[in-house]
Length: 455
Image 1 (cartoon, rainbow, N blue to C red):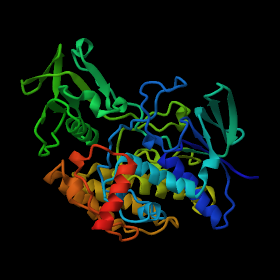
Image 2 (cartoon, rainbow, N blue to C red):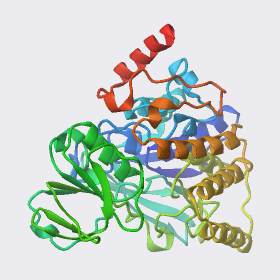
Image 3 (spheres, rainbow, N blue to C red):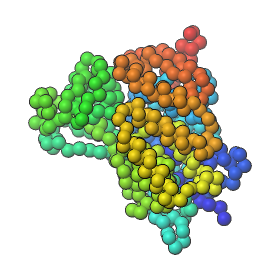
Image 4 (tube, rainbow, N blue to C red):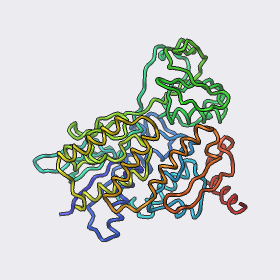
């Protein structure tokens, strides 16, 4: 009897899983019946931009956290699929730091190449997943959002690819309830132009805080104050951006900080991270973790320890993204196809404990990068995922970290990298990021093609 596999989510993780099975099918493997449930009306996950916040047209919580004018803040060479290069998709080299629309087009390009859309049920939300011990299968309850009709289907395996950047972590501070301006989480940030001329308090000290502060300043905000809990980012910020210790309280529109200083504030943007949340999974199947490089209860970062027929993709704190999702998807596929045999429960636990012990000893971003690169290499060696230069990606990551420290505004303009897949050297971008106000793919691709021809 043909196996049935449920894949939850058609973002980069879910699409990676569908693609992995299609690659096996093209090689002659007998693949299972695949059903991918996606509650949005389009694929791409977080890369599928929507202007909506709060609730979508069906009254469901909006999944996406994407905003206009986002550009990649890491080199595209670190995102490159080993079996579908940027050169193949775009027909030639591009700069290393493209805007969102370009990356979305690249992700969808590979999905279209293998025609995986035929496996996806859009506008369909998974409400509940539980394991039937008697029948030894999963009961998956779904709802069609356009009609409200629900039904329960039976599956042999379940793969969760919903990501963990959609349920915001929202802190509370004294005085928030009386603040006269707008308070929002980065999950609901959509357009930097909304804050033109406003004095902004950005709360956080990671990538979202960095990028949203720069975005707002680039598009004409007033002065920006970034408040941090433990340590500042310490970039050489452009004029109008500064970092101060943690907020203690708000008094009307006046922010008070631990160092005794105050600032007048018109809007507060909380770049305070996200929660891993899987309310549709039964308790004995539900991943519970905070953001870390090697979550507990997931062997190889993929297989649920108590029931490996449940697999989670992309649940780590991520330096690597698309290539890591691919490597996980290939391993999940090979387990389902019988190509990869899981070791015993005791052996799986020993392996998991060793990785987590190593993670707990990490002390720097460079050590984090090497840790996740080693994890990626560990996954790749177990399957036939196409070879790419993982050691080159390590060095790119580390160079990029240095470049941001040198100049957080111009690092996208001054540096380009070599593809770990094709060896192609990226182009310089035709316009400095600070002055590139139009992030449309037409402008980006068209102007870079002209730039390439005249170079």
